[in-house]
Length: 175
Image 1 (tube, rainbow, N blue to C red):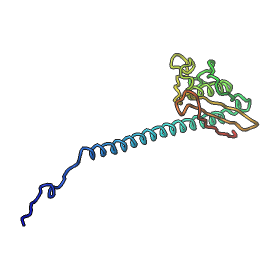
Image 2 (spheres, one colour):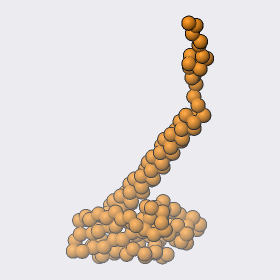
Image 3 (spheres, rainbow, N blue to C red):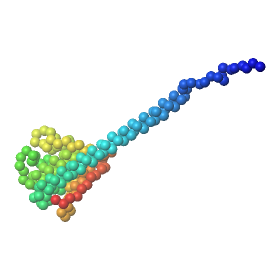
Image 4 (spheres, helix red, strand yellow):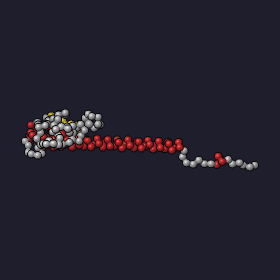
């Protein structure tokens, strides 16, 4: 008996089919999208960390200013609420010597301008005798209150870019 060989039984399939290539591209695409989302989340948290560091630095700067001006501190000149704009009557005490009460007014105006909510205000601008300060916290604002001999300094800002200040850093200290 003679055996007949068929061509189909001996042939082997080689290479990828189009379906396998499409599935590989789909899996790769999903992986790359996941990496992009991870990168964006990292950038957002990095920006939040920077804002928190700036808020902490500004709060400690104000605490040091209060400690340095003991006369105005004891007179209760260092108190300001959220939403209060920097004083337009603040003398720029970095250019000339000031009395202790004028220094307190200057310190609070400088601090409020540094927070960022008043970048467009005349007192914080860059012309004439203005303070020439541009704050970097989005919608940044601050509060200084005194209860007994303990000060509370709070800084709040818009951390999620919603248009309203939603993150707050607070510290308490005794001068």
